[in-house]
Length: 156
Image (cartoon, rainbow, N blue to C red):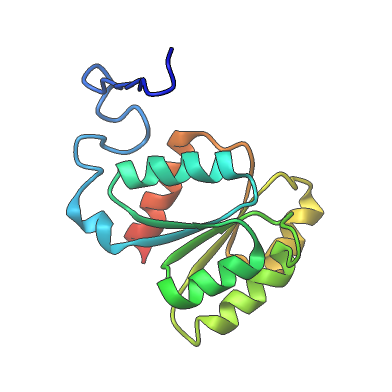
């Protein structure tokens, strides 16, 4: 393949069951999802990019940040409804970030979810104590992620 050639990949969802991923894929990308802002904070660019692409495919307004400092700045400007954050971040870790995000929200409702490789029961307790509303362990399947986000959106 030469340097200027491009490859296009198409995914045909026509054969996928309407409810295969826990949400109705025929209506999931509704315009209503565009009003739900999500911030992904993760230093793993591949994981963050994949989640971002998936959520945008379903119509959500998504931004990403690669560390806690960048995440805090994005949260202040973007004012997300839902923040999915890793715990093991460089610099400011998720345990330090959660209370800072709460403070930056200045009373505005924001849902904080830890999405982390830290999966022991004391990790969950520590995340909740730091200010996270939810604790989920990576890797997370696309269906689980989409259902979680849809549930948070519906409850917001």
